[in-house]
Each structure stands twice: as C-alpha cells, then as structure tokens.
Image (cartoon, rainbow, N blue to C red; front, side):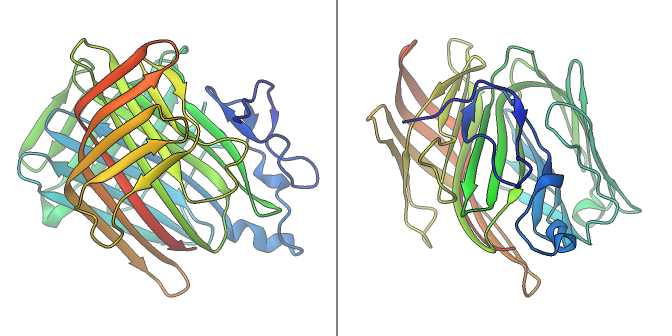
Amino acid sequence: MQTKLTQPGKLLDTDGRLSQVGWSPQPLLDCNLEYARFYYIQLFQRFRIKRWDYYAVFTPHMFFSATIADLGYAGNIFVYILDYSTNDLHEEGLVIPLSKGITLPRNSTQGVSEFRNKQVSLKFEVLPEGRHIQVDWPGFHNGLGISADILLQEPQEHESMSIVIPIQKTRFYYNRKTNCLPAQGSLQYGEITETLSPDTCLGSLDWGRGVWEYKSFWNWASASGYLPDGRSIGLNLGCGFGDLTAATENCLVLNGKIHKLDQVKFQYQSGDFMQSWKFTDSEKRLNLDFVPFKDRTAITNLGIIYSEVHQLFGCYSGTLLTEREGTIEIHDLIGFAEEHQARW
C-alpha cells in the first residue's frame, strides 16, 4: 500500500495542493513553498510555514546535535551533546523573534543553512563531497564552549527517506531523513576533543518543510551505527501526524540502501518514558526492543508557542526481515526514540 514516487516535479501545484503524495529513496520534488495557499490573506502564510535542518552525529563516546529552525513567527537555534559514559547531557538554545538572521535553502540537495550572532555561529553547507557542519558557541555550558567542524560524506548512490504527505486539506509535510553518513572532523566540548573517523562515526539529517496543524503530536525513532561485519545500519521510524495511508517514513537503511517498511507501532508508556519500548510492524518483519538510558526533556513555553519533547537515548536489539538481505540481527545499537507534543 506504499506509493513510491518516481517522477521529479514541483511539490505544490498552482492551487497550493500537493502535486504528488508518497515516498522516494531520493528527493525528487522542488520545495516551492511560495505556492502554498492555506490562508485567504497570503501575507499571514509565512508565519505558519515550518522549516528546519537538524543534524546528529553518533560517535563511539558521544552524541552531538545542532539545529537551525524557522517556525515562521520565531526561529529556534539549539545544540546539545550527550556523553554515553557519564550520561551527562547539556543543551543550549536561542529563540529568534521572526527568525531574523536565519537562512535556510529551498531544497535539501544544495545551499547553505546559517545563523550567527554575537553568541553563536552555525553553518551547514552542502558540498560536492558531502555536508559540512560548522558550530562555534564559546559560551556554551557556562563558558565551557563547544565547537564542531565535521564533514558528513554523502555518496551520490546513498539513499535517504523522502516523504510527502497531506495534513488536512491544504497543509502538508515534506521531509527527508538521511541516516548513516560517514563522519570525519573534530568535535570539542570544554577540554574534551574528539577526532571523528568515518570508520566509527556516523551522522544523520532530518530536513523538514511544511505547514502543520497548530496542535501536533508525533513519534520518531532513529539510529545510525555499524554491524559486527562492518556494514552500516540505520533506522528511521515515525508516526502520529498527517495522512500516512499513501506512505510512511519507516525504513531500515543497510549499507546506504533503503529497505522500506509499512506501518510501525510504537509501544511505550507515555509519562514513564524510561521503561522499555517495543517496535513492531504491520507485516510482521520488525521486532525491536529499545532500552533507554537517558531522557532528554526539552520544553519551550512562549504562550501560544509550546513544545515538549521527550527524546530517549538507548539501545535497540532485535530483528528485521528484509526482502534482499534476509533477517538482520541488531544488538545494542545506540539510537533514540521520542514523543513530541507541540502548539506551533
């Protein structure tokens, strides 16, 4: 029941409706958000369009993430880092009125995402050899400081999960998630400096554009790592938002190739997030347990704007049956799973 997109084109037609709905292993559609038509007074539309670039890097010792987001009436800049051995997590964020100073490209395949002020500088650039992530935040964590200069290698044949789904009649979500990008460069946090090697470190991208309902809820799960035989393995699972009858974002990524899944059920105890989670799918191909070891809780409350995310870091173990590679066994793969509620 999954609709696979094969033809390039525009995301929106002249009436502001999605030209195609479904998924693809590479982005095919031009994100022409200027065609959006969900308010009678078009001037107000920019305040409801959401755009973000979220990068994450898994190293043997740490998890690092940096985001530039434009939520229309405000921007959001945040960086966080987690030490696996100590469970120490620190996060800093900025809310930017009217998203002033934020630059985000039209499509995920080229361009520069950037924000800088006197406190912080973030720059994400798409280069021929991959994605260049640069972060400099001297005041991070009471002056400990954090900086990153990382290249995520992105071979042309590397597949990603692109999804286009409707949300009500005139709202929509266009998303691209890329797992298992070999990472090289450096990451410095206080007195700790880690040199990243593509043999052990992998990065991922969550690139989102769309118009959501004011009250929104979703689950997302992701991981990028290596199997004992050296193959890279990634997970991307999601549910809870929009019309997913044509396609879901659920997949396994094995050595850079997408293995598509249909509907996936998140079984967990909301409010008691540190209990074990269970993931199964509608075709009985996926059977995963997720044991959390850290709850990253991030709450933003600005009155009409509210966001509460519980992002659980933990280990995935279980099996997944693929059509081409047979049964894949997963043991203690570090990743995350989250519940997110928002008014935005």
